[in-house]
Image (cartoon, rainbow, N blue to C red):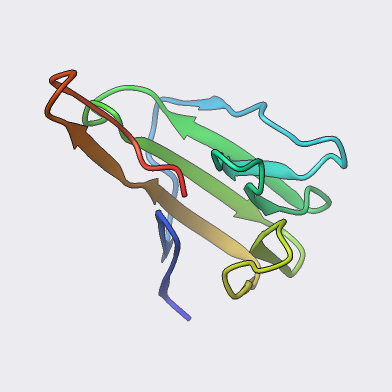
Length: 115
């Protein structure tokens, strides 16, 4: 699979990492990477063993987050909720993950989407 979406996350398989990334550190209480937060507390996560996550912090549109998962062992992107989005298998490789944004006309600002 070269591309997939899960809620507000669009992920695609890429050949190489861009330059200038910084280590990503957000994990849940089980140690899984939190790729996107949910206002209900049911986050989109990737199990940590065999996965490193980096973040692009320059040239990112306002309100958007762009993460890169370096997957060494098969894993999946899933939502930790009872009525969750379907999990997506991730084979070894590099994935770019873009977290969508929305515009709030009342606050006149863009923000990351949270479902």
